[in-house]
Amino acid sequence: MSDRFAFDGRVALVTGGARGIGAATVRALHGAGGDVVVADVGDARGDKLAEELGDRVRFVHLDVTDEKAWDAAIASTLESFGSLDVLVNNAGIANAAPIEHMTTEKWNAAIGVNLTGVFFGCRAVVPVMKAQFAESGRGGSIVNVSSVDGMRGSPGVHAYTASKWGVRGLTKSLAVELGPSGIRVNSVHPGFVRTPMTARIDPENLDIPLGRPGTPDDIAGTIVFLASDASAFTSGAELVVDGGMIAGIPHK
Image (tube, rainbow, N blue to C red; front, side, top):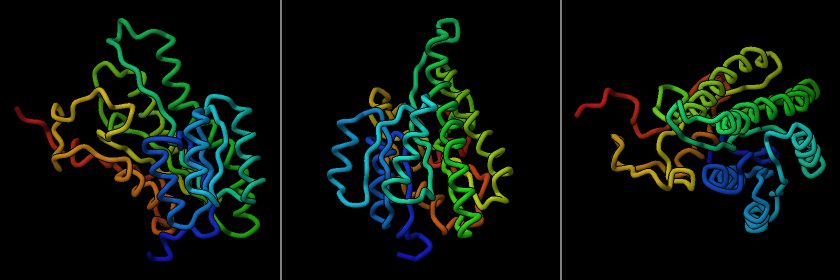
C-alpha cells in the first residue's frame, strides 16, 4: 500500500460506526494502520466491533444530536490516543411520507441527526485539528457522508433530502473557511447501498448502470481516500459513489 494511503499514527472518529457503511469504514481505516474510535448509539454493536478488531480501536457511546456528548467523545478520543486527525460524519437516519403527512417530529428527527449532528461534530473537532496544525503542521480531514439525494430530489423523503443537501452546502462553506488551518472537508454521496437502512428497497426498481447495488465497502474505500494524504489537494469536493445511477437521464 502506498504511504499516502497509510494511517499509521493517525486517529479517526467514525459516527454511526457500529454497522453498515460506518463499520466498513472503521475496518478499512484500522486495516490501513489507523487508530479508530467507533462512535454510535448502539452500545452492544459498538463494543462487539471494538472487541473484534482489538488494539487501536475504542468504542464510545455518542448521540450525535447531543452537544455535550460530542465534547465527551472528543475528550475520550484524546485520552485514548492523544490526537484526532480524521472525523467521518456518517451517522444518519431516513424516514418517508408524502409532504402533507410529513410530521414535524419526522422532519426534526432527520434534520437533527443528518445535518445538525454533522454541524455539532465539525464544530467540536475543529479546535483540536487547528491546534494540531499550529503545533505540528499536520492537517486534519473531515469527511461528511451525504447521499445522491443531496444532488437531486426524491419523492417522499423530504427531510432526508433536505438534510443531505444541507450537508453538501455545509461541507463547502467549511472547506473554504478551514483550508488555511490545514483542514480539508469533503462530502461523499452514496447511491443505493445494501445496509439495514435500505433493506426494504428492491434494487431491481433502480437503474444502476453497473448492474448491482453498492456495498458498504464500496463507500468505505472512497471515505478512506478522502481521509488520506492521497487526497491532500482535495477539499470542498463531492464524490458521488452510486454505480453511475445519477449520471444519465433514465429512459423507459
